[in-house]
Image 1: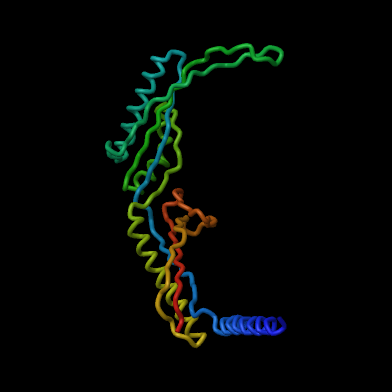
Image 2: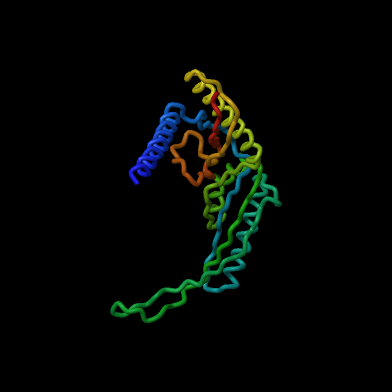
Length: 241
């Protein structure tokens, strides 16, 4: 029995020595690869603008309210075409009808409501590649107030129609940036950069140029600025010889 215990103890010592030696070897010779992140950025100007506005009328008679809105629609359309906006770029949306009522209260309790009239609203949208022209119209549209049109303008939204091509260009930039960084790290450590093991693309972001917009893990897509900055990251893993 003592002989068997001695054999088991000896085997345990050999196995322990093997694992300890292997762990030391791995610590002394870590995996020969490095991971590095590269950044690609590009400034660009939007080539598509979307602008919306809304005009409204009010009357106690629904038919008269609609006729007034129809007249305002023609004034809006005439104004926009005279400003150089093509008719095919002008989209009038469906009319919205809101019945306005005044609530009545007695001793703080609601007891009913009185009809006040009809408010009719209609939105107009312009989508165009002529960014500067539409931008100018969006600033001058309040001139319609002088013609009796109750018009409210929304801030324009700016887009870029060649994002797919831009993204490819930026991925190339980010990949090259990561490769150069990896080469410098390998060279400074007395090694040589080997084969590429993996490449992973990070989040694609679009922010306004010279803005303080915060980056997001889910990605940022700015539509408020005409001039934008796009960025993307690439994480590369290389073998090191």
